[in-house]
Amino acid sequence: MSIQPSLGPLVINGSLFDTGKPVLVVPEGAEATLSPRRVLVGWDSRVEASRSIREALHLLAGAEEVRVAVVDPEATCTGNGAEPGADIAAYLTRHGARVWVDRLASRGKPVAKVLAQHAIDTSADVIVMGAYGSRWLRERLSGSVIRWIVGTPLPLFLAR
Image (tube, rainbow, N blue to C red; front, side, top):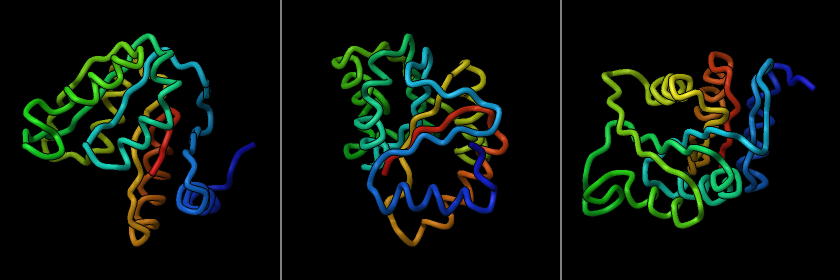
C-alpha cells in the first residue's frame, strides 16, 4: 500500500509522536526486511538515538554488519566520550552485533545527506536513527524525513 505524499508527514507524526512506538518507513520501490544483512546506525549520543538502537536491537543483533555512523563527532566528557561511537559500539557488541564505527565529515552537507550517501556506499539495507524529541520540531522532522525518503531508496527505522 502506498501512502500519498500529502499523508506521509501525518502518518509519521502520528506514529512517532502519538504512539511512542518506532516506525519503519519504506520508500516506494524499496524492499523492507525484518532481517537486514547490513544496517547503518545514525549516532549522535542523544536520547532519541539511544531509543532507536534499543527498539531496533533485534535487527542489529541479527545483522551481518552494523555500521555506526557519527557525523562531525567531537570528543567530549559528556555525550560522545573521548572516542565518539565507541561506547555504543561496545553496547551493541555485547548484544551480539558485529559493529564498525565510521566517523564522517559533513563538509558543509546536511547530516541526513551524509548518512544517506554512506548507507548507499556501504550497501546498507536499512538506516536506524533517532527522531527529534521536541514536539515543536514535528513539522520540520516529518518534512525533512519525507524529502529524504523520496531521494533515498532505503528503508528508515525511526524512534524517539
